[in-house]
Image (cartoon, rainbow, N blue to C red; front, top):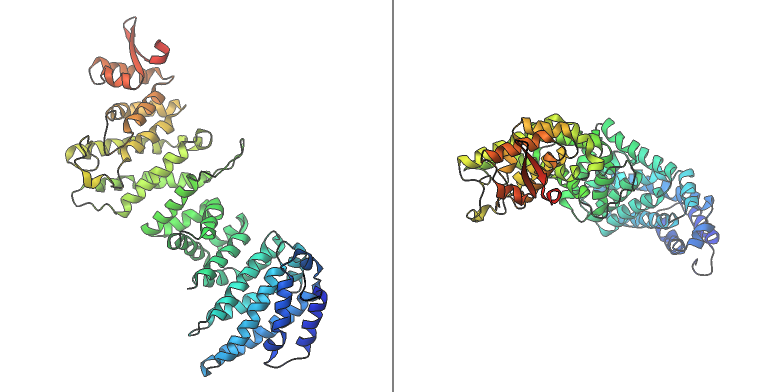
Length: 492
């Protein structure tokens, strides 16, 4: 409750009386304790509900005077008025702290604060504090942090307030605070940014000269501070909903930046807590973004063959990007109900089959990560980033052909079936490759007599042996002089 035995209106009246009766530099000392009492009072929901617009008009006057004082101190800071600056910052921080508390789960107070015009001076003060050079203190950090917390609480659940904050803070305040040395300041800035963002405001990043830079800064924070959930949420819950923004960043950035983006997309796709309601058209990654990534894979995929060279670097960024793109394509296409749009990309099917051929070819020309191995002789390569690459290619082919006759026929025409059958043995460089080969052969032969006939002809010619087909759960039968591939379950 209000301290001690005073209601919020009486506390506010006392602050106003002290404020109007004092115009000198001793203002912080005069009003600090009463404002601290009001800060404590606003911790209680009942007290927050007692506040009227007049309470926040008082704070508008106080912050306006603080803003003017900070401007003057900034201009004369080199003369050494550190003590004066500290007291000014202490009062500013307490005002922000009090307003922060007043906004908690209280739409009424949020609206009052917006109406009296407290947002603009708050943002101006934060900008002035950012410009200060050569001065660091706990008080300065507190003013920064409480100011951002205030804006964050002010925006929660209030679209009109979000709009005002966005118009005043984007892009400069966000950029300045995201690049701040203080980790808590960065965290609170990310909180405000996430709270304010929407599909429309995210699109603003594309239309402003500093918008892409702001987006890039958030992505870099995800890499630098992986435990900062707010930055991760900005990317995965906001940026990914704007494919044009992500593709613009990806195209503009260097390979290191692209790898970060791909890792964040992978984290989003592999989120076990992600729930998409049955019948919903929502996707964890939008269609256009996945089509863009598929096009990137088609364009750059041969870069992975660098790993076949004796002088290859396991950290080669071009090759790593191809691997991460393939992982994302496999993960996305594993959800048949959601991924069918990727099946409509002939270039993706053709490229995947061709790359499987190329990896087999370079693997036979010399001993490298693409060479099939059952001896663990390449012990130094077991943790190589390309381990499992061929298995993932076969996995992707199976996904792209699932219930899609056109793609099944295309794989046969491209010579993909013998390539897949060639990977039915254990390969230490490709864990589970035989299982993915079984899955993909089953997909290719299901309701496709042409593919079945090709495999039977290979069996007749000794290319595909019976043991290998048995391992796939398939059996070749002869009827009326013709061979047919059947599931062993149907033969029983």
